[in-house]
Amino acid sequence: MIDIAYAMGTGGGASGQGGGFGALVPLILMFVIFYFLLIRPQQKKQKQHREMVTSLKKGDRVMTTGGLYGRVTGLTDTVVTLEIAEKVRVKVARNNIAGSVQSDNPTAKKG
Image (cartoon, rainbow, N blue to C red; front, side, top):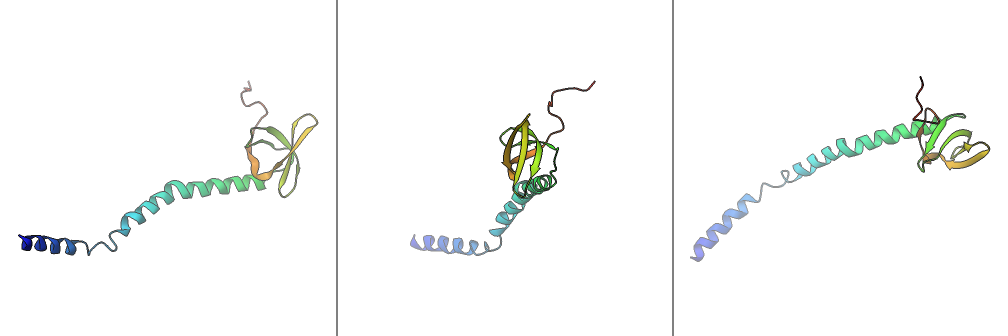
């Protein structure tokens, strides 16, 4: 009966030897999927945001990440001065500009 146990044990060791490169294939496949579904689109979005922030000029209407709408009245390398109401100006870091806005009232319809 002990001979049968030893015979079964040696067969299991032979099947575990082929797992070197085969074990890496699922990890490589997962990385490729993550790259195309998560990493690459995020890099594109960051690039577009960086280009938008560098192309800001006076008079542009923007929205901040905090939800403030305003018109750009001053620019430096790191700070944007926004006029959010008549004679009310705030300074905001350039990276906190969420995007450009076409008009002050987005629900208004031209007709």
